[in-house]
Length: 216
Length: 231
Image 1 (cartoon, one colour):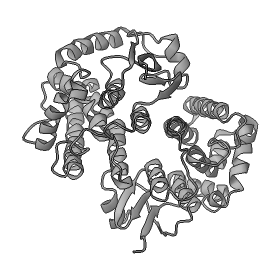
Image 2: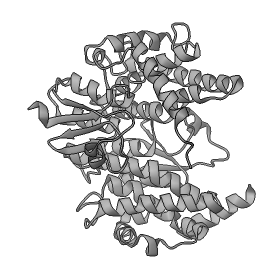
Image 3: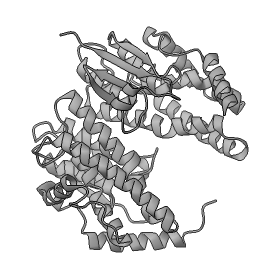
């Protein structure tokens, strides 16, 4: 029986992008459904009644929610190629730890960088740079967070790249100047087809933010 | 494995610390429980978890593992011969991880918010949110347990550990605020599950008595009130 895979997504969601990359890494064919977040579909509300959020992966009618949980699910089901998590339990724990760090620290700070002003924005920028400096420390001299191969932590973080122009413009800074090692790592990741085709254009994301703010 | 090979940095009142303790008990792994002094952080903690500086930290053969649910999964993956903590089916694993994340991201902060709420109206609103969260968890219990004793089936699993570890503080919150949050009328499945969970051999020795936890809560509240205001 052929697998039926549907992804409920939103084009500029860094969480949705994570799932797109994972599916691409595994070479999985799926149906992509773009949601209008101001008018959520019946299907989304039915498949994720608890949070009503994207991304949702629907595998043969059964929903999986929360981007990092979905990526682990994809890795465990399609375990015949391109492992996304390491096989060693200690390295797996470290990978989960750093992906969790991205969710807890990077997401929150990055959101505040472009939504706040004045002192609050300065505080957000401080947290933002601190979290990226910590990540640079963790990356060290490795080509990827996963070591020699692109993996779970890389997937969790690379999707923020599509929002860098938003952060830079609102926060008035340059990622290249502040976090050069991260930019080097970004360039390496962008050479991968799974990443390049899953990330939207930075300027388009910025324009959509302006449009969203103009509507508020 | 020598006892000193496995260390757990923690503190008895913490529900997060309880999680790896339950997991290690399930796996019958002996470990050194290194209790942190309340109000200060040891050198070992700061060295082992420089990023968050928080307990629990599992130190296995000198390698630190942080974040309670990550530690529990690590324990399950290293000690493979004893009963499994996560289900073998990837979909069931995803469901358990989803609800465990819900406990941490939604349930726990909301429950904690009851004691922090200022005034009757605010408190009532938070209590209502907790009731809604418990209703969702009651439904999840029905689906996950499939008529068996635990979220994990016949035996305690990841989600039992994630949610069950909150029971001590849930009972203290009920006691302190004169509330009945988990009860036979509104959440019959969870009410019975809670008793089974607390009675389980892997849990009994590490679940603090409600009285003791309530006393500790008073000390904690007093210290937080007495503390200088944050800048």
